[in-house]
Every structure is written in C-alpha cells, then in structure tokens.
Length: 508
Image 1 (cartoon, rainbow, N blue to C red):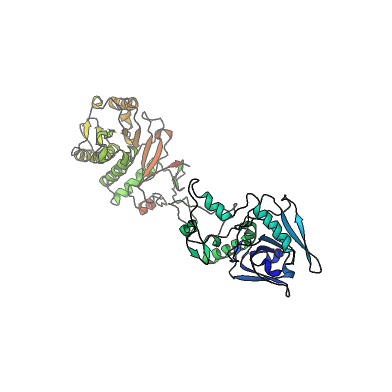
Image 2: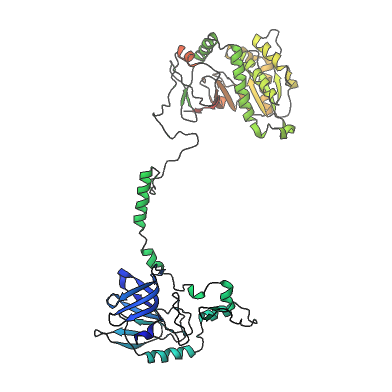
C-alpha cells in the first residue's frame, strides 16, 4: 500500500523550526516510519541535496499536492503546482494515536481551508493533506474519486493548456516528434529546448524568505565595517553630514580670525568681505599718509596710476558684461563708456582706466576740460591714451546724447573742492544725470554734502574711506602696498583680497 504513493508530490510541514518541504515521494518505509522526497524545496527555495528523509515525529502536517495517474511513467521531475478543480473537493487524512488513519471528505474551498495549488498532470485534483504521519488509506476510494475528477469537464493538463493557448485558433495541433527519456515531446518543447518539467511552479514563499533576513544584524555589520575603514558612517535623520562649498577648506588647523586689520584711530565705519573678514575704514588724512609713505618706498605715482587703471578697467569690463558681451561673435555690439575726468590725480586715474578699456575694444569717450597747464601725470596719461582708438573731447556738446553703457566718474578731488563751482563741472553733472546710465566712481572723496552724481558702484584704493549711501556699493582694489608700509603708519594689516585684486565690501 505504501508503494502506491511513490511519485506523488507532497507538502510536508515540520513546524516553525524546520519549515515546509515540498517534493516528490521517492520512498516510504513503514517499519522506520520515514518518508523520502526527491528534488525537495525548502520554504520555496530548491535544496542543494537531491533527497531528504523525514521521520513521522517531525511531521506536523502532510498535504498531497499531486497523485500520479495510470498513464504516468513515474518520472520524478521538479516540483510543480496543481490547478484547482471545479469541484473544490479534497481529502484529509487524520492520524490516530495507534498509527491508523481514516479518510475524511473535505467540503468546498472556503476562506479557512487551504487553497489548492495548480499542477501539470493528466489528473487534476484538489490537495490532500496527511497529518502528521504518512498513513495507509483506502487507495481504491481515492482512485475512484480522482478518476471521476479526471473525467469531469475542464480538467486538462496545464501543459497542454499552455501549448494550446500559444497557438493560433485555426492552426492544427502539431504532431509530437522526438524522443527524450522515453517520452514524446511536442514541437513547443523542442523549440524552447528545455523540459517543461524542469521549471518549478510552486509559489515563492516571500514571508518565509523575508523572515530569514536579519536587517538589524546586516546594518550593524555595515556600521562596523564603515567605522573600521574610516568611511563616513550612516547618519540618522537628526544628524546630517556637514556640506562644504568648493571654496571652503575642510581641514581647519586654527580657528578663523575675522578681524585681522586694525587702525590707530577710532573707526567710524566698518565693512566686511564675502568671507566675513572685517575691513575698517580709514580717515582721509591716514589714507593720504599711507600713499605718501608707499611712494617714498618706491611705489611711485606712475605705478599707482597703472595699478588703479588695471583694477578699475577690470571691474568695468565685468560690469559691461564680461565674456558674454566682449567676444569675437559680438563685434556689432561694442559697449560705450563715457569717462568724466577732472584736472587732478583722480582724473589721471580715470584716464589710465580709459586706456585699458580702449585696448579691450571698448568705445571710450574721454571728457577733460581744457586748462592752460596740466599736471605731469595727466599729460603722460593723455599721451598714452591718444595712441588708442579712444575719443577725447573737451566740450560737453561732443558727448553722446543717447544713453551709454557706463559712466565713469573721476571729477571730484578733496584738494580741489573749488572745481565743484565751475560751469563745466555743473554741466558734466547735469549730463550724467540726464543720460541715466549706471555710474562707477573711482576713488571717490568723502563729502558732507551729497555729490551731484549718485554712483551705483564705487572703487576704493587700499583701504576704504567712510563713504555714505551716495557711493553705492563699495568695492576695494589692491594697488600693491606692501605690508610693512601699513605697519609704518600704524596699521596692523593682513590682506583680505585672497586670490583676487578687486573684492566687494558690505556694511558691517
């Protein structure tokens, strides 16, 4: 009787400790009360061993998933699923204490009953459960019931159903050809090459496999590895890693000192750079003394004019659009700059700036009133400017009536305050206000009374003066004064420029 169950596909539940095994019955020993499965699956995963053996004491529940029919050749393939029949009737074999079992008819499938599993055999039936041991039962009763199910409508081999659904309705059924292990294979099997019996059809046990994954242990292992390798550990939501900009230093050996410039007098106004460094303002007298000491040590007026012209022209080129405006593909839109200069050193700085702008293909119109005697520095700068394509005018009538791109103001000088009352000065101020172009002031002085021309930007030299709101946004340029020159006039100085020669300043 026990040999009649050989070849059946069964599901053996061994409890929570061992799990669920599924496979085809290869041997049943009534004496030792053991059952063997070939090509077993454990919790939905194929086992590495070809055969496993179970004792009756380890089995909690046993379900028969497939009973071989009379036409089967007892070929033990992989585990397959069974299709649910229309009747939904199965059999369950109970186990008594004396080792005998009885067959109990099971009603149609309900929410509490185990769902049937599809199979691929000639005989389609419902699952038959045996718990907890493999017992003897009436084979004739089971055979009669399985035979009646096989004759009922709708029970066909799942393999034939799959083959038929893949063909065209009008296409004839292909003849079986080829012989493999004594079995005839149809053309579909020959086309795909692999035996369809080798494909496991059991549902994958997601819950069982997920229970095998210890997430806490894996995260602990990852944390241990990251701590040993020195990599950044995973941060919790409340601890975000510090992010740095491209211009920030990650390794800081010393604390940052933001106040590295001190002056010998009371500071009326302070500025700060983009990096947070404090830049104090200096009085006009101290600024004049600083330039005088620098000139005594070799930083002559010509050098200072050249450095100021380079820095001012570089700032002006940036304000005009930089590479977006000044490129070979945009020669038809050359920017126009109007340069208003007075007959003093401030005006010479503006002329130097105009020369550098003209060398960069900027249309420069220089306004300088006529005087009988000019300063030597202005004469030298005008001589160089005349060698460029820039235009020099002495009358305001020659200035353009249409708006220009930029106006550079170099009219004011503290030592020549009387010039503010001259007609040409007032006319130049009126023209600048009427032109409505943005104004850049180079080295503007500090006036108690507001200037006639309100600047949008102002460029200070070395250290800024306590400029007011009329000066607009303050910029600072490096004109090359050595550090010991600052110390000689009583200024403890550390350069705030970094890698630039022109930096913006903000009100502290």
